[in-house]
Image (cartoon, rainbow, N blue to C red; front, side, top):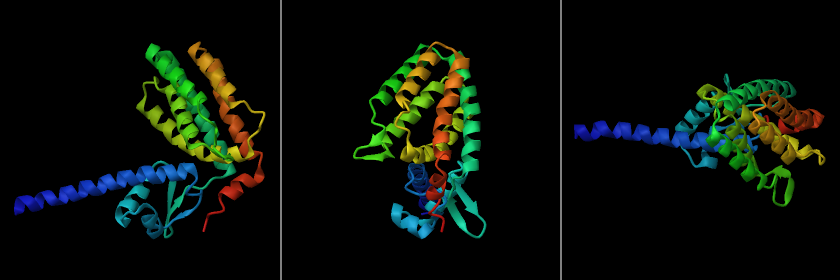
Length: 241
């Protein structure tokens, strides 16, 4: 009996951790996709019903997401989705350009033929994806967004730095939230596939300075679209309650 009892608690703890880890992924995806709006209060009973989860694993999942910057914990108020703002977007864009260019330079310096193949393959798959959701030109396609993230990861995948890759993921997720705002005000003249084509061409040519300039312009265009629409960020933050 003692042997059985001693094994039960660890098994239960492992099960709770597994559930919490699954919840981290689901909540993370909903925040990045905008299903949980920027600034929205994350009420545990409502989320427990939404995800058919217990309160404790859900609370642990939200606590873990605070480390990513996607969730914030306010004293006496509980959890909220991290809000969006003009100042945050400007800061995010500047930092992402610096981090991504550093990672890209290192990736281009160390990348081999297999790395080149990953970049070409990711770019090819991205070109086969439709930018917007079928039947809704104002909604970014989830499949395109996932492939877009994979493409940018492939570009820096040979940087040989776990920390740079971790920073990339965190910044890319934050950027994805703003990119979904930008699609509502997209410039029909903007050639996003052409921007990606040029980036790949220059990266494979190992022209680091030119590649970083293209990266900077690529990220800045999306930022400028959102900043050029004064109501975009206010509309996105309407869920604070």
